[in-house]
Image (cartoon, rainbow, N blue to C red):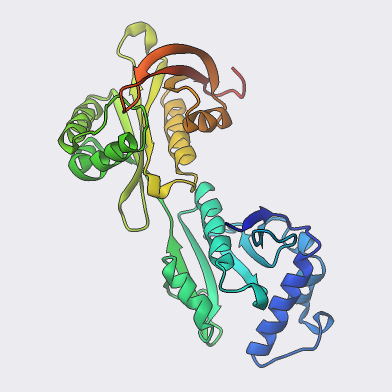
Length: 337
């Protein structure tokens, strides 16, 4: 079973975890102290008042499955002065190590950083700390030019998913590979996006070729999310109405996140990018439809969309079974419809 990861900078066990971290860290640096009270002030305050020390930051705690109290922690520092957010104070009690807790804490910290729109995450680690260094490298962190010049301290950074608007030429260039792969993955995963399974890769690529033409005509905009390796892991499109009496509205369509990249907030970021562009270009109303009771409904409701109604047997799912569809709308530039 997976550990429970929670955010709580006021948990009564947090002070002890941070105190243990700093005592071990001081000993490794050759400046051992016997108690938290003897720590340098900058570290002592974290162990004595973590809620105050990390008031602007995200503090995550890990509790093993079946346990009643957390045995690990990590801090995701809020970005400051235009710098990427920084991961600090990763610690798991010695008796609870090698059970995946550190990796679970890091995964949640990275997910939250990506959901917040950060382009990258950074951290520092002492060069002699082999196990943490191996973990960071396995997660895609790499050594970069130092921002902290203390001897033996390595500075690492990991790029996160990047959302960008694609030009018509870029849509066409990605049509046969990354964009087609996203559409095929969605249909294979059971998403009702206009196609039946199995979806032929060439058919998927042809749809994106047509979308590229619509982008060139100015009636469809496309945003894509690139993973740290450059691979496309998500996409969304915004279609504009061609009628004279509907130029104030647009339609969100083909919001797709690859199954391997879910849980990182990409769907919300792609949707937000499309919404922001729609508002900036004069649209006042957005509409969409999605299969009733699908996971996408939680995303849209959480992003402030309003359900307008449900139509039974509106479209077939990839297996060919007729399913109901719920229509949603969102007025731009105001909090409520």
